[in-house]
Image (cartoon, rainbow, N blue to C red; front, side):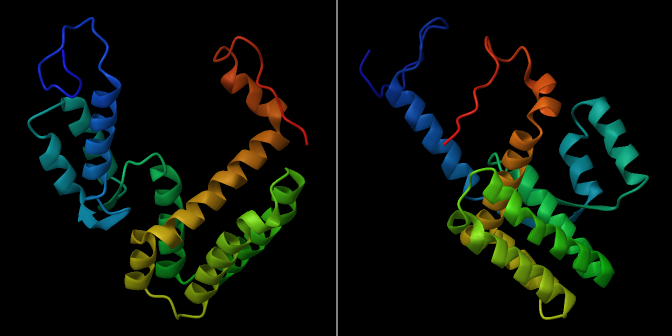
Length: 199
């Protein structure tokens, strides 16, 4: 079979490297058409997606409707949890106007700095992302960042990905800091326990 051929392969034959790369490129192209953070939608839009499908999903949507009326979709790019979490949290601060919570969160963010440095991450690597997130919280508090601007920031590559990178570093540092606590969650995933690399 020629490389790059679209001819169907037998079930036991491994796809060629070319086919794997092409498939990856197709997935990335599809993902690029989905915003990092979508517009607000009703749960009814989710129900319509699944109404001809799985009854379990429909029951879960009904359960969601008992407490929620809207949703936002996020791009399923491996960073969707981090992006969805931080956007929802900042949107909550914006909508609620809870200055006390915003101030508390700003202090938490500032408290991450020594923990990240202690975990071996150079300040130069995360300082821009931390400044950006602190600025967003400050602008929410002083009223200079509205919902449309927040949505715009999290739909744009640079700002959105910087904050996601920061959150990933915080999680990584916390897992390393509390390795004994987290080790049971990954036991059995490796033949040997994970190795820590010290500088």
